[in-house]
Length: 341
Image 1 (spheres, rainbow, N blue to C red):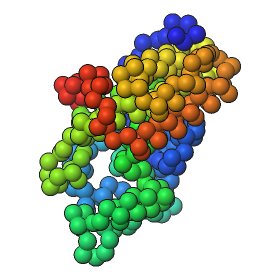
Image 2 (image 1 turned 45 degrees about the vertical axis):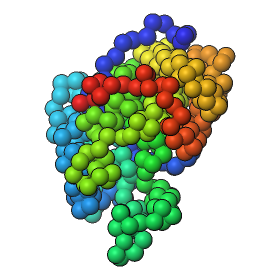
Image 3 (image 1 turned 90 degrees about the vertical axis):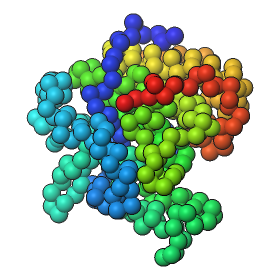
């Protein structure tokens, strides 16, 4: 159990938030520190809609999209900004980093969207053509060879794309904002200390799901059961990693530290429940460094080392495990009725 005073119960974030990929396969605190996409790399959703019209239509129904018009008008957001000494919610790094997308337009830096395609997948200027090349002028998604698909994926990731083929990269994107790793924003601003009920399957398979590429571009297909199993396990590991990093960063025994430590302790318990069911070496590799770990102030080095081990195990699990052998955890998966809408 966390060794802070009684944790504070929190609600979800005012709106959803997500940020841009920093480095595929890396696992350190930088990956869970929200950072805005490079505005020079942002091309805007109008470019994405040329190939992803169905995805854009789905996005426009989500809180991620609506935050652009709604967030700055909410009393809660205004009060947080006031306590933080911020004059405009759309004109400061603290709020913009998780809640908006900025683009460089000539000499002006402008907020152009809420949490957008590029918030989650990365500023697209350097990887857009790579992502759209299926192997030649006449090639299509349907005719692309498996070899070329893998090369395209790797090249796109190297150029800055957050490709969700590795579920850990997807989870890391979500949690870099949904754990709100900003102590002053929580303790001084009164912002909620993360989305404490966040769970990767439930939050990715509801309203924000946009898997049209799996069918004819019209049907919004859910993920397969095998993928959902991997998502559940990797989501727990990534959440544990993010919570450990937040706990390591805490400097005072207050709301931020208490909530982060309680969250880490909860995810550890849930991951042990998974391990008892599947006896998976990579899950054990994530849990072993936590056997005697103290979730206390002043234990930064050990907490970060444990987080590194959890992240590396999570990335490898997402790469190597296909979910077919994880049927024992099916009772733990959230039911469709519990998906976030």
